[in-house]
Length: 163
Image 1: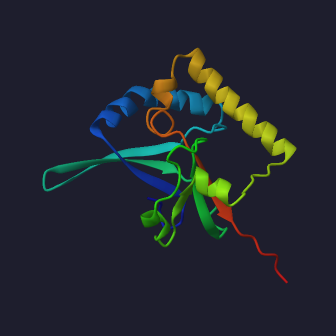
Image 2: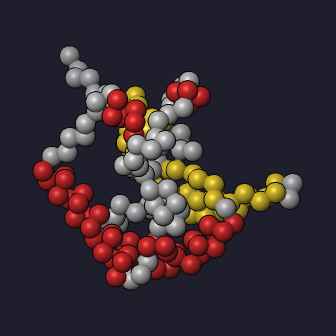
């Protein structure tokens, strides 16, 4: 779920994931501060427990990474695999469906990234991976977003030149 202004992502998590988050937060915070937030890792802002009629729900709040000023006309959840990676008919019937890898390929889509942006992206990704491996932290920094659900979320924004 995303906040109305698209600045925040709200995700429910299990009680087991709460335990993992408690284990990682101190080291995670130190890492993010050291690199001045230049990371592709999720930026966690808070973790909450909501209890209603004795039922507990845990959630994390993360910084949204997409612009709130661009109109998004398609979104994709890309995992780099084509095995069972096509949006279901039920998903496609939604007002704003999330398409998957096979849908992206069938539409003959491509991602174009300039040389400078590509280099920055690769450098940041390599640094995140190197730091996690060097400190034996892949399961600590990445328990939820990447270990259990490694995805590239791609939002396609249709930009129409003004006349």
